[in-house]
Length: 63
View 1 (cartoon, rainbow, N blue to C red):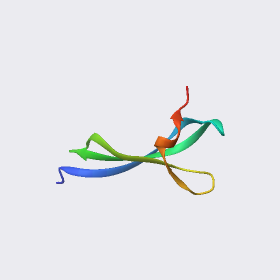
View 2: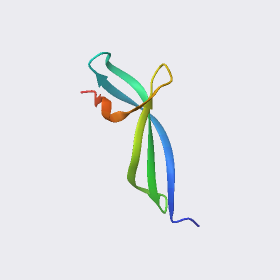
View 3: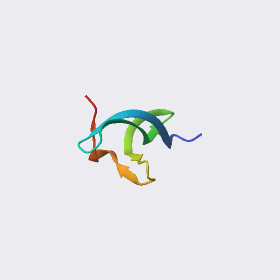
View 4: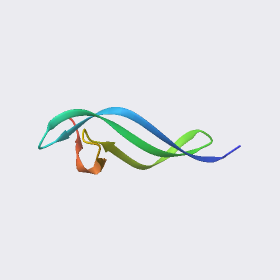
């Protein structure tokens, strides 16, 4: 049995950018788990309409 594992999870979220305004996008989280309990997010990113992968630090959460 593994004590520490890494899991990738995708979920839709609302985001906001100055150019596009608010929009819904799929955000992928890479999380570290200890005995199936997530305790640290290693990275989160989103894929654009054109297939580019962008870091989520570029856009803020929609209000």
